[in-house]
Length: 274
Image 1 (tube, rainbow, N blue to C red):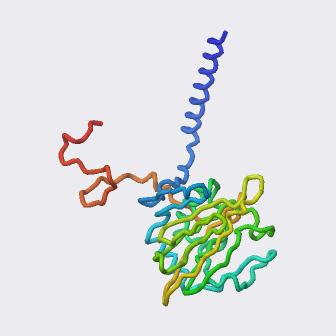
Image 2: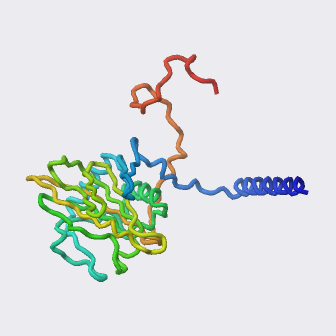
Image 3: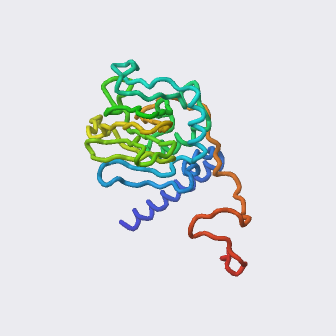
């Protein structure tokens, strides 16, 4: 009896496979966006002990960081904080910022960054809030704060991603400081810092209070982009990433920089047969 049931299950499984195969032939789906293709070379995720914080080096490319700084520099305004459901000036936040992406301004150059963040957060791209690029000059800071509150403006922020756009040396300050977790993180161009603000049941993570300490030195700047993801759609994304993973690969010429463990065989004998 058991063998008969096993055979029936196997036949049913094959039927489902064949059905899905022929349906895909008749009604082919568009190739889905694959954020994996948009990961920069050297993209690496590091756990910070048991703090719940993840650091991702090479989250964005030098070109992306330079582009964001250049675009934001001429559009900076005083950064605000959320009180109730209003954005107001506050002496505890002295930085300036500019919008990088929102419902009515969707820059296609920012989409790969959102795609990477959404992949790590495990949510769709359109769950990202309006995105800002922030600038901290000499002595400017943002005092200790949480990225969530009881107001709609900052409630239900599942996770935060801070992406540094330029380097700062240790003696230049500008670290992100988590007092309760006893950790400071040094800005490095392309580095992202990621943490969750709340559990699926809505309870908060009180240890995620953090501060942006001031950079020190004449002419010193810290540039960072903030992305907050929520458990529901925030801004429908109109621009679409091209499904570049469908493009034809280009054979190596010999002058490319290759990652460790890969090379161009010097003769056909070294090449494995197909």
